[in-house]
Image (cartoon, rainbow, N blue to C red):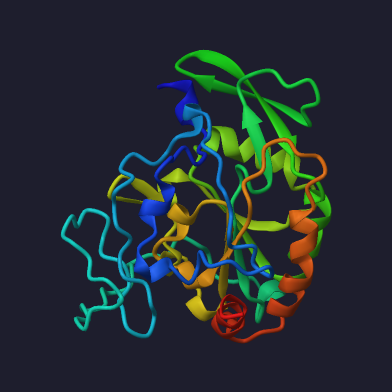
Length: 276
């Protein structure tokens, strides 16, 4: 196994081509959600997107169906077409356990790891917060991990307000020990890794319909639009982070999440912010 393939980042110079008309509103500029970003081209060792010309499936929950299965290579209808395809049956088994008593009634927040909460590299970093050994093909490699500024406060606050789930397209052999070191408070009620993603037309996509939660109570926090192309209306995008220690993005997002934690339908709030 190539050691660079265990961790995922956006390495997509054509990332904007992934976003179809279903996501145009998602990528519009608004200060509350910080939509309008110039995304950097990442180091190839974090690459997880192989087909950058793939269209996302239709996602509008009012006029378009849920995404087709990953193995379906047929063309997906666009949201501005009249055709409405049948909604597939729910998965036989959801990927999250039942909601705990402590989280009953809370909205669910799905949080990405790499370039959202941390930045990791196989290249030595002098100020690394963690150094995680990862065994690959019989050889132990050191992964150097930087924590995003204010990530500790962000996680603690989010854990109080939401049912929090870590969802990364990286492999568990890397992401699990990083999460052990990062989450000292037990914020993440569950951890989902690459095998829980849907491999859709060359992309690892986080299909929120497989979680086993009501979609109008689910929010995804991610730096990569390709990760949530099935459900852009559920997304709170964040800017990709590498090593800027003056970054305040996570801190700035807390007031938004405080409001979302009290909502019974997150769609209305997120849509109103996109429409501003």
